[in-house]
Length: 333
Image (cartoon, rainbow, N blue to C red; front, side):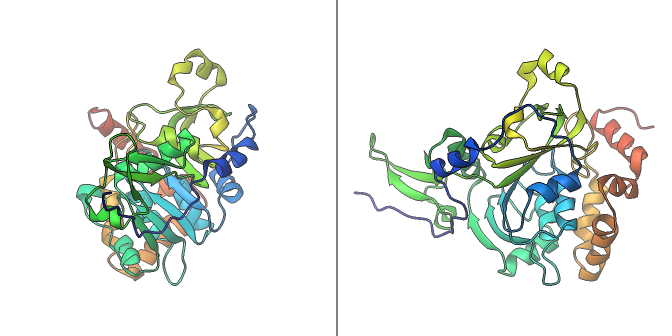
């Protein structure tokens, strides 16, 4: 019998598919108008202590408007799935400042770094403080946790993380394959309380279109107990029905639809606008000094009523036109 390793990381959510099914059985599936403001969606659906997950990848197609609103409404003691999270994780960590604790526990696969842009000084500060409980996974393993949940099983067996320290710091467990006798890793299902995903188009009922790579969002939408969709634009249900094969996320998964043009800013939205690299660098630079960071957050998040006001502070329509031209490789105005 081979020696088996069990990860020592904490398991933050219940992987029991039957418990999840009991919740999903009661979730309404009717075609009803779900359009509301981001402010109302966060107030209604995200509560202190909830476990959250963010769609997109890196700074691509993230739901920045929801993240800002979570800070404005001062949610506390949240869990978070750090799956390819960069600027979204940076925003979440901004809620851990001056004794306040927005973020309490993280399933981490990619956090703190903003890829080639460097590390977030404040996210690093928060994570090194020890105030946030952490369980480590590979990016693939965390995606497999969503897949296990969607499949309706308490775990899936994978080979990823075998022989690594990541396994030791995860909540995965080595098992023996009953067919081959070889080692595998059992990865527990993950059912977030609330997820938020930014999409290109959506109707009022929540039927969504994502143009381009979906990353893990198809699974994330289906395993989340509550789902907030932010969308570049709302389209008619007739248009959705005319091309049903373009529907990426069906309405029965969705609890709120929020129309937020440029809603991934300062991140990229494939085919719509490029990332604002100058503003992302500004975030990283200002985080080095806590007084400057407090003033920055006050100006751009806490003292503005909504995401539109934030966009106007960042250059408004003209800036968005420039970023759109850059994304589409058009001549500069």
